[in-house]
Length: 226
Image (cartoon, rainbow, N blue to C red; front, side, top):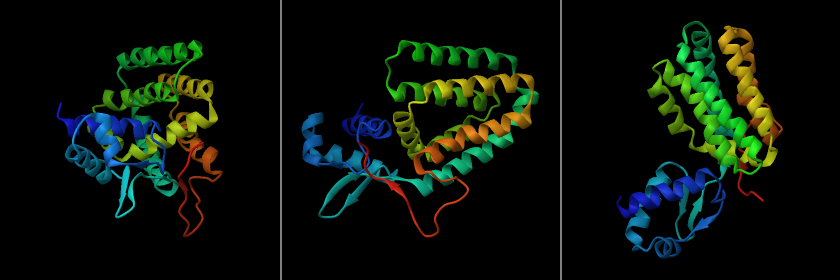
């Protein structure tokens, strides 16, 4: 793998999992020493991450991990919820039987992770994300899921932050269990109501605001994490 590619993927993962905090400054010289390369591949990686809005280059000041912009997250939640509410009733009618087994396997992995008593929030987040991905791909909506993930780089940081701060992993697991049970029974109305709560409640926990309302003319950021 070319040096710039390796640096890009490493830094991207560290930003998404909050190993690199919002607002944290990155120095090219430090990164070059860390990865044992010249500054050129570092700059190439930084340019790509800047294009994804994960890094912000400020002339004469430096390169910083971007803040988590709450209004942008709110819009991403609106997008995700809108797509899910269109998909879920179809799933209740047409989901392949093999999907249930794969989702059960995912839930078992969530359960075992919780029982282990020692795990990083990002480990649960990956299983969480995979749980939702499976029913998209089962309906041949792979491209839709990938498109959502392209937009969701900031949403990923937001969700990891919520998991770190709330620690509500048993609740997340129980909601996933309930989602699968409702899918199996074809109870689309109850399922859709639950999914709205499932997707919107992290925003309300962190900001104290509903996703449906936001202070006019005011952008909110998470620019530091203790």
